[in-house]
Length: 113
Image 1 (tube, rainbow, N blue to C red):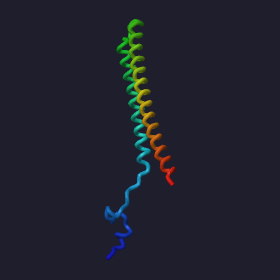
Image 2: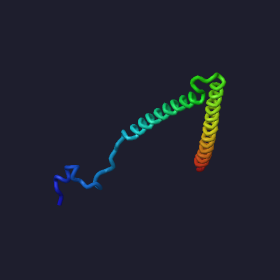
Image 3: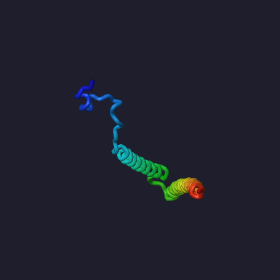
Image 4: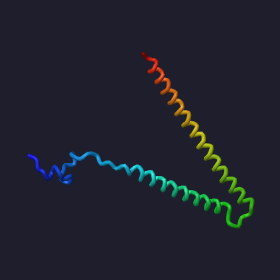
């Protein structure tokens, strides 16, 4: 026995009868939201860095104290840059090794009769 209203009205169907809900806009919202949060964090970190630099150097300090604070700030930045470049090089080497392994496996597969 089948009821005509149940077959035609999607609100009366069972949950198991419905397919998965497709929401193609969700990844876009996540990317835009993530980018907004990243920009906000960068701005906040920049503001905190400027405030810290001003606190370290002092508002009416002499040039020696300001130069020392600038040297510390540049040392921290250079260290961060060096660590990031080492990490990027390690990731590139890992991907290159994986690509070489895939290439050798594909070459072995194509060489088989």
